[in-house]
Length: 387
Ligand SMILES: [Zn+2]
Ligand SMILES: [Zn+2]
Image 1: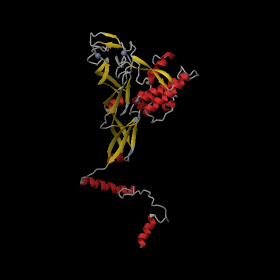
Image 2 (image 1 turned 90 degrees about the vertical axis):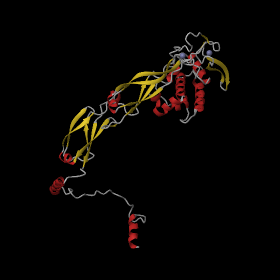
Image 3 (image 1 turned 135 degrees about the horizontal axis):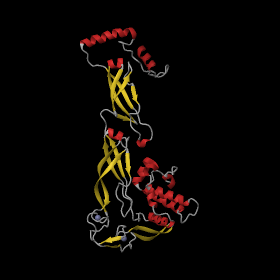
Image 4 (image 1 turned 180 degrees about the vertical axis):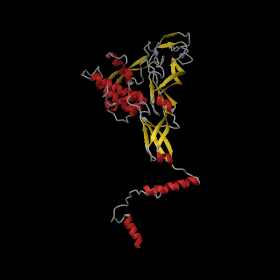
């Protein structure tokens, strides 16, 4: 769906709405469009839209991503509440769980994990693959997510009869609702263990340092974020794993800098080369290349080597170029012999170029205000001379 509506618009709230505003708006809208109450055509779609907007905006992390990157930043995240809820009976359950505050659903998606990674300029251009350690929550190695000490017996949770939720009738302005909240005895798992696992404190997941291989695609720039789906924290009770976000830092290079998809180098020429022109050798990302410099080149001139810049991410377009910026360097000191030669050169140049030895001052246009105005610099000057 490319023509998604703005989530704030869907809930009819301002972008500065706080958590309470979001909850209120959701309740109001959800009641209006809940499929059990509203049989109008499109009500189900509206309800889904409302639900999705709520899920994104109520979570500070996903809301911040949405604020910065729009729908793209939260792609696919809001759908998780609907997995397995194709029939309307399921809708009722999830609807109730919102009124219960804390989610009563048992399978929880794992959290996203963020990682910073430094790569060299060249690796960022051509792409690379990197092994790195990531700390994340994985299925507990001691209890294999049974949440009990090895050999410890498990039984159905007596408080919730294995459902993981406890239900409580709640009377509200809109009528009676069942409030569902997580069972505190079994923390939503539905089972009770005799002796809780000492490693994971009966959560079934624990922290692991895991070596993973990260593919850096060609053309990444400083600050690019690579998303690795399902490589974040494992979900509890069989929920989906979160994602791993790799933020790439590109180290500066001694020779090359980057400008969009172009790479830029600075080539310094001495005055003689600049005057006579010729072939110079410059480094490129693909080895040394020769380029021709026209006689009389000036500082600030640049030459373009086509196709030797940065490949586009995901091959969507031609490769960038290499820009060679020319700087003409005037010698700081000359020998007596060199001075004599330069003077001779100057004498010969006087015949062809009047600017050869005498500087021409190029003046900028400066406005001192309009003539006749008493505040102008002219009247001030006039006053200064007559008094
Ligand atoms: Zn454990
Ligand atoms: Zn329970």
